[in-house]
Structure formats: structure tokens, C-alpha cells
Image (cartoon, rainbow, N blue to C red; front, side):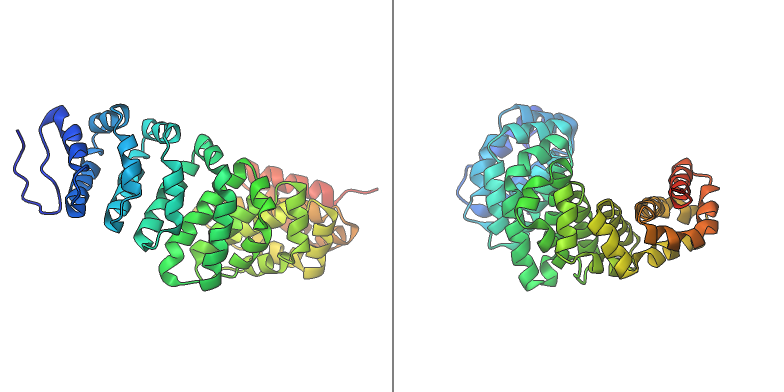
Length: 345
């Protein structure tokens, strides 16, 4: 027995445990509009933990592989939307990783429908937030980099969300293992993306670049590709997250000698000191904490060069002020910086 549903955008839903199986049965019809209505009702149902569990454990997810390859774009898009809702729970993420859905999902990155591409990227980005998901997606990094190159060539505003989600996936994968992205010319491509007009895309590009600058090869590529000058510009960005991520890349890069001296030539120290000297209320201190720590750590590494130590010896009062902060992490970073700046051979 079914309830009468007045909403024309949704399929009728049966009572109790019959609801999920009935809707999946309706997905086997040929009419695309009927499939979309059934998928919309399923999207409503999986908000209930019991229905989500039934969907995942009842063997229904394997039916979605056919829908991801459906001829109708609305069906493909709505199927991705359902998968994203399933992914909100750990049992759903585990089921997706154990399924054969990743390949058809990745194929949707080249779908002619913008909504399909965006919804597919939403699923992949959510999946990559978990270590197991990021590991499963490492094999897609090369394809993600190629797709990012394509998006960078056109830079259309309507594709910005798609690009932001792609970059988020790349960041998660590269934090787990930066080597696939490094091998795919990731530093060069991300360096170009740092100049994007969208602050969200600049933020995500800098975050991905920070992950790639952890290994020595990534640090060297940042130096060789001339990206430090772009990062210097981002330290003046109006978006705090962009500033923070840019400072993080610099912090990683100045660990190696070429990074130190390139930053000294570019005049990075005065910019970092300017960021440290900004007046902050308590709320701003919380929001800027990571930026401040990254700046202090970058200055610590720069002071290992004699030229950097000379410049920073005049900034000891500012470092002392930071050493007296209430936050222990900031105090520790400032103490280390002072110790290196005041070191005598």
C-alpha cells in the first residue's frame, strides 16, 4: 500500500521497509522522468538512518552503476546527488569504496552536462576527506591534473565550483601521497591557478601546493617554477585562508637552501613581519593563529641564513611580543624563532 503523494517531482513512497526496494524497482523503468522522481524520493529517504542502512546493506548501490551511465543527464546528476547523501555516513563511504562505482563516477568528470560534472566532483571531494577514500582516488590524480589544465585554459565562471571541488580532492589525495601529483606536473599547474580571480580557487590551489611542497622534490619544484613570486602576492590577499595557505607553502619551501635565498631576494621577510605585526582582538587571534605560526616558522628557517639573521635581528621586539601571547603554540613558535635569530657561532 502506498501513500498519496501530491508532489509531482517525487515518486509515491511505500510504508516501512518496503519503501526503499519499491523505489529501486521504479529505477528500472525506461522513462527518465520517472527515474528522476524515484531518485528524488530516495534522496529524501536516505536522510533517515534506518533507510540509509537499508539502502547500503540491501545490495541496492550496485544498481546505481547503470544509472551513472544513463543517457539522460538529469538521471546521472540525480544519481550523484543520492551518492553524496549516502556518503555523509561512514557506512555509506565504506560501501562506496567496496563497490565498482568509482570508475563510472570518474568518467563523469568529462560529462557534457555541467551539473553531472559538478555533482560527481562533490562525491569525489567528500570521499577524499577520509584517508581510505583519498587512497582509493590516488590512481585518479593524473586525470584530475589533466582536467585542471583544461579548466585553467578556459576559466569560465560557471565552472568555478567544479574547479574548486577538483582542487579540494587533489589536496586531500596529495596530503596522503604527494608523489602522483608531483609526477603529473602538479606544481606548475597549481602555480598558474594561484592567479585565478576566485578567492576560493586561489585558496584551494595554495592548499594543494602546500601538500606538494612537503617532500624535497616539491620544494625544489616550487623554486624552479618561479612560483614564490606568486605566493608573495598572495600574502597580501584579502582572504585570510589564501594568505595562510600561501604562508604554508613558503614555510615548507624555505627549509631548503634555494628556497631561503630566493625568498631573501624577493623580500619575503618584511611581508611576513608585517603580517605578524597586525593588531588583533581575541577573535582575530583565533582566526589568524595558523597564519601567525606559519609566518614564525618561515622566519625561523630564513634566519638560518646569515643574511636573514641580520634582517631579523632588528625585529626581535616583535618576536618577543609574540612570545608573550596566551596561546602556547604561538609562544613555542616565537621562542624557536628568537633562539635561531639570536644564535651566535
